[in-house]
Image 1 (cartoon, rainbow, N blue to C red):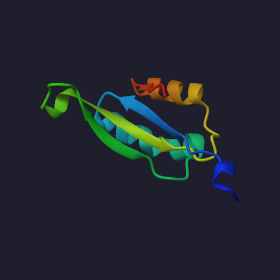
Image 2: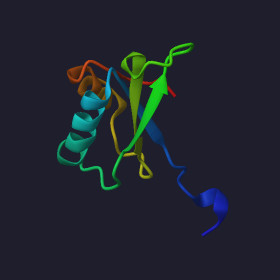
Image 3: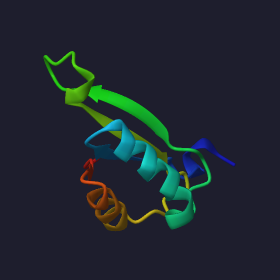
Length: 87
């Protein structure tokens, strides 16, 4: 198949308030959305802050088939006091 015939990969980023919320959300993604690949957790320190308590956590979800609904992911993140980062 030609390179330009490929469906481009999509990455969704959920922003959550702390590590516990991020780990909980990541664990629920497979059951709720059927996500096959394990989401990646990333610590996102706020500018100028070194304290881990001031860090947001990102849950990065790969969506190669573009099958995940952004509004549903945003609502899911809101259940964990977070949001879906706009592309």
